[in-house]
Amino acid sequence: MQAVQLAALAVTPDGVAAALDAVGGFDTGLVNGFARVSEPQSAALAALAAAVAGSPLAEAVTAAVSKVTTGTIGTDELSALAAARAALLGAVHDALVDQADTAMGRNRSEWSTELDRATPSPLATGSRAWLGELAIAGWRGVDHDLVAAADQTVESLLAEPALRRLAMLLDGFTAELGACAPIATMDRVPARRWADLWTRALLLSWRGAESATSEPVSGRLLPLGVDVHEHGTAVQAQVHGVLEVAGTPARRVLVSVAAAKVDTIVGPAVWQLLGAHRQLLTALAERRALELTEMPLTATGDLLWDDDQAKAGDAADPFVTATVQLAQAQAPAVAPLNRDPVHIAEPVLLEGYRFRDGALELGEQRIRVELDALPSAGPLTPAGVTSSSTMIGLLRWDASGWSVRPLAVRRKVKSALTAFHNGDWALGPTDPKVAKAQAKSGDAVAVLRERAGRLLRN
Image (tube, rainbow, N blue to C red; front, side, top):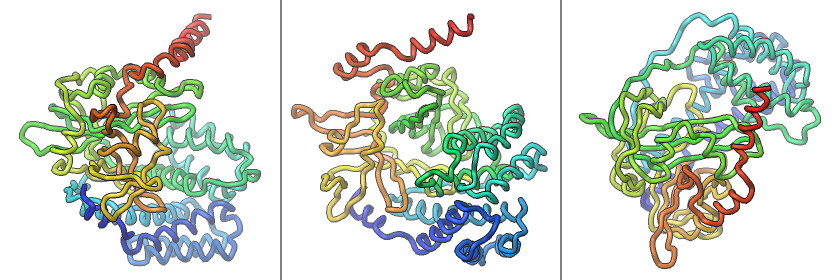
């Protein structure tokens, strides 16, 4: 990635700011709820309708705004507003991804999978009613009773495999709201995040989500890097890579594996929770390719990981893969519900840069680096990143513009160019100081497993 390409990312595409303003106005309206629509809320709803005036949603959204502002609030009206919000964020996503693809000279597959238009399940309809109550009460009106009202619906959804996606979303959403209730006492409400969850759940309740069909593929997966996401109760490793299948162009793919955890398991110990994926962890720690046999691949480029269908193979330097393969690899299509700027994560290779005032500079161009997002489960540190000369990262976007999240760097250590990757500690820390500290503190995962086993035996 050269300086001229960074220059192509310097200016925000036309219409992005206006679309985000319309979304932000609606999100602010959700904070206090639509039981009684105030003048600012009415203006925000009108702006939302105006933003989609030229789209197929125009008539439905205009009618919904008219009813909501006059006190007639139903799930159909709220669903139309949610669709308008999602459509605006989808347009922003598409503009930004097109900008990034142009800047990096990449090709992307088009989404062509048919949508599931099956009749919504009565269970999904019940969840829609609760989501409507949330919108009427607003985030400031959420208390423990309102959260508890969803318990039976969520329990029923979890028991239905076909609705598991909606069930998991609502389960996590209600848990988050419950932990914050009563929300009226909060100093700051995460309006954008909760509006994102509310919108996604409401649209999923109509069962208009994309098809989950997949094709089996056999070939070689060349990992580029791993992005580790930690939460108090879960950990997820997302491996970005290039897939080589005989007779077809190379494709960019994503592998996601996750596990439940407790908040006392942190740092390198989180890799132990993903121990069922031994071949994947071996490839990350030892920087090797993976030979895949009949591994399911979705239209969105997601490999549905099964460790039994993979085998760690020959050595494969991610920096070589990024240099040789990344620019030509076909980018996957983006599913309709994932067309949101928050989901943008494009692997990039950066070389010959310098750091100044916390930003990476290439020539006259600058880009922010997410030093605060470095996982404690790997060897990357802010000092190590800022002293590097080459980086594999994820190009991301938020309201402040484009940024890069490091996945791997190369820097000089005692005059020798050395690579550091987020996945280096997937089989255990290789830094002697970290390994010693972990041994001294004890194996938290083993202790918790032993205690859980004892409780089950009793």
